[in-house]
Each structure stands twice: as structure tokens, then as C-alpha cells.
Length: 235
Image (cartoon, rainbow, N blue to C red; front, side, top):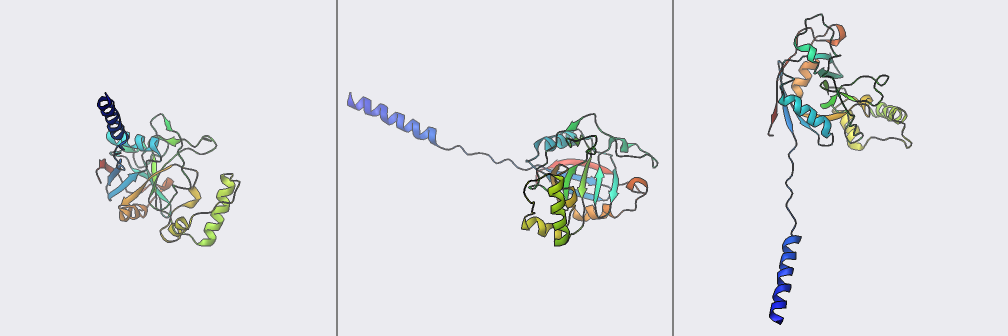
């Protein structure tokens, strides 16, 4: 009888040991997307911190929505913008930038973690007067080209951000963020106001090339810069 009881106890202990064994969690790979344009290819990674924007962008990529759209607004030292569905068939006189897909994406502004450094991929949106919740466009996005800033300029930006975002405590960029804005560049005046949902990992030369094209009315390139294909890549 004692042997039977002992065997049962050993079995329970063994089961307990098996049950307590930690399960290996498979790490999810960040999504990478290649944007092929008439001036070259830009590769971006999408942030997991902004899942609704990530998933919406991937949905549109899968549907081949972006194939044929223009970079309809280009401002050197600032950003390049694309995604207006009306730009696919627009003639040279058409004013672009108001097109959408009939819905918005809730804001996922993860500032100060995600900020407007050079190469930041962010969602365009309507202004605060008509869009106080800062919901993003369903399809329009911009990529930051930006410029570099001095410490004094960043000090001014910090005070401005504290006021705009109604922060109770003084806001300070981290040393890494300051160094990035001073040496690599960006658009800090947009921080905390738009959803940044990814960043460029390859193709900064193409970003630069697009930002330098000649533009006309409403900052539209005089010669079309078109997206040829957008696809998800493995790495």
C-alpha cells in the first residue's frame, strides 16, 4: 500500500514538473515593407506600438491600393506625402490631398517614444479645428526628410511642446533624441500631434532625391513621382 501511495505522489510531482516547464514564446518579427517608386525604392519597418495603423497599412498593401498613387506633396527640408487615391488618374491641374477611403484610423500618438526623426513614417490627417481627436487619414502618409536643429532651437521646441500638449511638468527630449535631431535631422515641431507608425531603414538616398524634385502649385512635383509597387518583405 505504501508503495502505491508513493508511486502516486511521484506521478503528481512529475506532472507538476512538466506543467511548470516554461513555454517558449515565439518572437514576432517586425513587418517590413518596400515602397518602389519611379525614383527608387524605400524600405520601411512598421511599429508594433501602433497596431491599428500597422494593420491598416498592411491591409492596403495587400489590396495593392498604393500602386499608381503619386507623391503629391513634396517640401524640401520637411517631408514627402503620398496616398491620395485621386492622384492615380489626376491630370497636372488637379489639386490633390483631400482624397480618402471613407474612414479614419484612431490616433495612436506614442510620443515621446516615437518621434519625427528623419525617415519617420507618419499618418496624414485633417487639422485640429475639424479633427480634435487627431484621427488619421485612412490612406495618406508622409515620410519625414526634415533638417537639423541646434540645442537652442530644441530648447524652444521643448517649451512649445509643453504648452501645446498641456504638460504639467517641463518636457525634455532624451540625450539620444537631441543628438538625432542635431545630427540626423527631423521635424520636431510635429511631435505629439501626428501618429508616427514606422521608419525608413533603407533608401534614405531616394527620400532625399524625391525631396529635391522641382515643385509647383500646392507643392506638387512638376514631374510625377509615382509609387509603382508596395510589398511586404521578410527582412
